[in-house]
Image 1: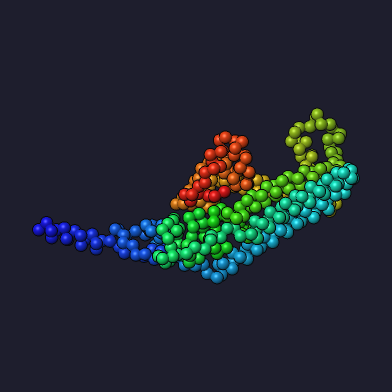
Image 2: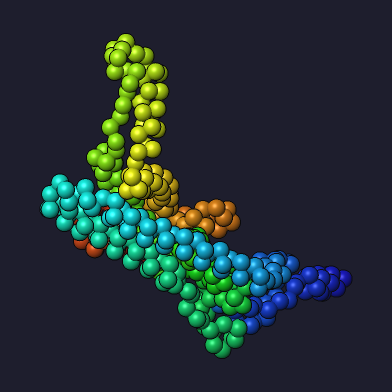
Length: 348
């Protein structure tokens, strides 16, 4: 009787097992219970059965995203060129009227900022964001033990996806260390161009600050004189603050009608660069914060894959490619500079 019960238990346990195939090495796996997510014990590939039900995007959807990105890239390039050309045209007579040295200095600094902004933009926009390397998969003799550790299968690309990669539906490819897809550069921000994207933000912010300062300086010299008629008869000491503000605003509005085309361009560039500089400063602070956290934006908003690496300034130093001597100078960063994260964290 005991032998019969043991046989029945063994038969029942075998019937409860679920047989499946690993997509990474092609080996047949026998799972004790049904699970939508499982990991192969040989190659280390992770299988997610529910994701296999997803369908690729339609051609219309991909075409619309491509048109949208090209439109934003065109608008951004036009704005950059307009700021450079209009700023030089509006400011150079005033700067050269001060002194020849100031004019040459202004032109040189403008050229440096323009070249830095355009070059970093081109590197971020037209360089690959970081495509994963091709790796053998699907056949047991070709796939060695642990070759696909923590790899998942991308249903859109129909090939393995590394643990630090995400699929971009706009670029239609998997991107290593993907931070986000930026329509203004028409490209993803990933492992290969993240540094150029941050350099582009820094260059634009510095350029906007310089443009605003130069526009204010030039506008101060080109603005028509204000006529405070009411205050001229009564005096400033007998007028309230509200009335004084209204009188100044009215004088500015009336004098603005007398501005030349150069003055109107100065006003537009000052307000445009001020708003753009504030917005990009917020984006830059966000980017530096995620780099400091050892994380990416897409991992931050994804609760399932919200990996957080080791925090510290060593992440910023490593991201900007600081020399190894910096880690020796700062004792607290020495050990962090030597250690490398191999558990799926962001490689900066």
